[in-house]
Image (tube, one colour):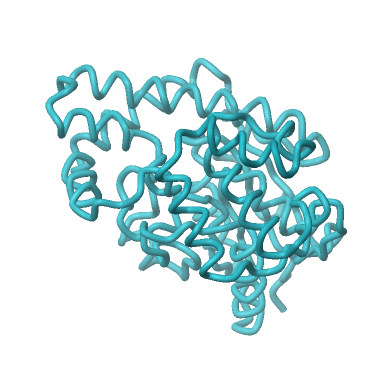
Length: 303
């Protein structure tokens, strides 16, 4: 009988965690479930380094590329979909292999999320329109006037989170602080998991980030961003903040040269990987660390 304990693999971008997940899934009779907030978007296969069609054909992959970039995917929706995906994988007699770099998604799986009710569509539409109309500081000032404690937690130049706080306040009658204080329900029992965190050498990771972005440019990242630009989406949507999108949008507009855009995209990727490493060290100290030199020797039998 197949061991159906979920194997969770976290790690920074370009660390090789997806290749590790694929190898372990093949060895363990597993299916791979995404835990990356950008790899859910269907329009961004190249820039988010989603598994290739060949890799997807080798064994089942779930929660990849199933969301239009026009939608703002949430951690709450991820938790619901991941729970369904895990159940589907186990029902098929396979082992869940969950891989990604979004710490909040792993937190949702193991600790649960605050039970924030769905906000009415008209309330959500109103505040997202206001976010487009107002400068970020003015939007933040509105929140500060109504919910100063929540506003103090948010940066004035983060309109997405400020907008979320305003729509929850209007839609539920309670501050987002109130809902965040409510306990969540975990998707997985931590005792029923094996948790790995890939922690590569920082210099090696930066080299991998540069090499990956250069490869993306040769694979068609520019055409991918041109297709995204043609959709004329709101700039505040999560997909529009994917690594490299801003730099390549500037290249598309003639504001950057190809070399400058590539350098900017690589630098953004390195900076993000650095933040991920810091977060992983602070929040996943109980997970089994995997160094780059160990990647090829790790197998299901020695987990």
